[in-house]
Length: 209
Image (cartoon, rainbow, N blue to C red; front, side, top):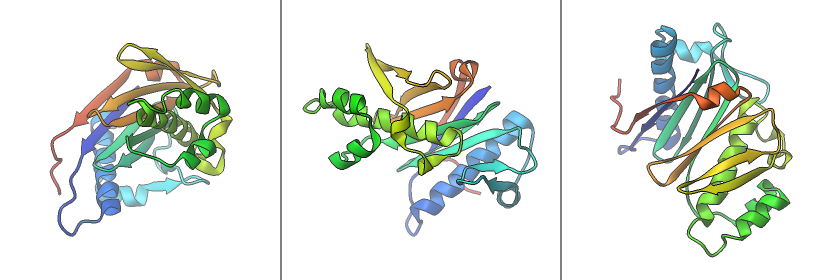
């Protein structure tokens, strides 16, 4: 079972972005634990429960069988739950520096992206590659201790979206647009997890506790 919880948020006067996103992430984590695993944990209890692996990936010290991962970008927070190690990344489509393309994308990916240099899809396609690589790096907790160029992706146009193929057959990916200007990617080693994703989107502001 792979379930995605996602919510929007707005910064109120005096609020700090990181603190807001951190709290929203904990709220989604607590909600998922309650609904999917019948575990009722307060934010304070979660603060004690969450530990980090060697490279910073969080896990629940007393419930290691529950795999989760959290990501956020401006205005959005997502929490993924799975029966297997999972990585998730969400990014808002925006302009980016050409220098980051050479650091993140393989030669083949750069050549593909260059075909869209003067087209509307250019920024979107970069973040499709970026979120796929981030989700892969987060899946095993390695993060950017590994090079994002160790895996490559091919994006095949499929009418309204793009079909994803990766250079590593051990991993499976799901990608979607959120609210028209964000790209979300999920990575798992279990194909059945990717094929049966349950999405729980909360586009109205979640109540603060």
